[in-house]
Image 1 (cartoon, rainbow, N blue to C red):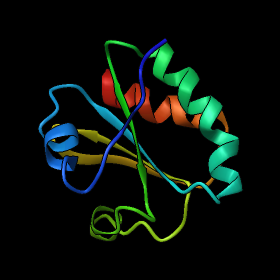
Image 2: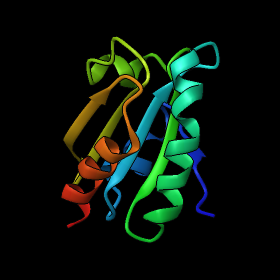
Image 3: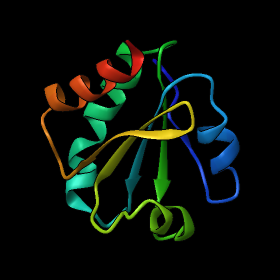
Image 4: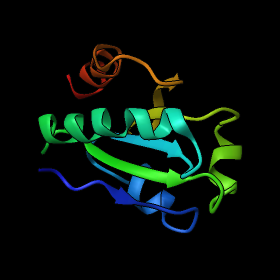
Length: 108
């Protein structure tokens, strides 16, 4: 199973923007029901795209700077970064197929 690491404002640039691999970042919070609902889907995708995609999570309560910088106003909010820029942004608990389509276009 692919590892999903928890990142922070402090290591966002090195973990996401400098990554040679496309990155899916899951902005979440422990109190967010929809965030918990999609967590298993994010974990499945991390396994399915292991080696082609880096998957990380950021707790918006503990790390306010990065979500503010990228306009994260509602969670769950998933952003696919490719080459250090936003490739696609998905807000809300969406079906796995929608997330997979966003990832496919980034890893292609």
